[in-house]
Image (cartoon, one colour):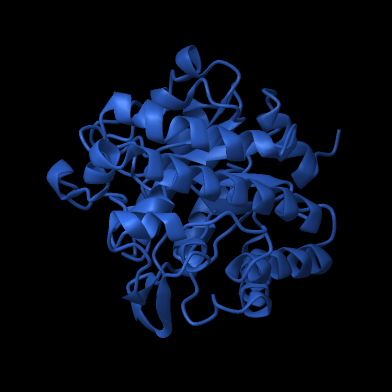
Length: 341
């Protein structure tokens, strides 16, 4: 059998072992992230250079906050993120402003355009997954906060959602319900536009000690499920970001892949994780912090080790998060070639 990219990726997400692990990587493209046509152009160029087995579409890290009123300066980036000029929620009364909206509103519509253009350019063979972010991360950023992310300090006492959880519970649930149904509609539209599934990112909100398990179960998991279940039998890959990411928490979610940073403190190894993952495929294997440092030799060793350790199970080879914008061609090719080693 001659394996195609689609065969390979869908086999893994169905719990099967293909000829080799599918491989991908993704990065941000500042200045090119606002318009759908510009994002599509750079993503297609990136794909044509490295011939990844699948595309994790990597739009602006803030596009979903714009829909509910946050404003950003796309000509002025702070690292991977355009500078925030204002945010929507300054008090509990502002939670009432978070209304349900159509999945093609504003920034959502620009992303749908990018999916259509990518599918037109790449044809039906390449699996494409659109990034959708956890509802609680959307609410946190609408309130002027910043998601914990990979390795940044995230003291619980600095989480501005806690007061809303305790003292404005009904308004918080209404806001999350509206966000959930909006993102569910958007996710369905992504599939109709040409995406094969969604890449659902928790943005570090699952970090141990940031939210309690009870808070997670009340304010996060039910709303995550609304979005994940909206696309029916289409596949979802869930990313839990950074240190102490609690990947085990997501085994009961309706997902086909789980992506976490095994090299980060507090996280379990991928090797052997099939014992608790069950049908879910593991994704990762290479520390994303190596990229952009001239570490192609170390990347090659780490990637080949991951391939060897997970050769007999469904596994997706990838960096553990977004790679740096300064990642070199040698580094990315080292990752790509390890999949076929």
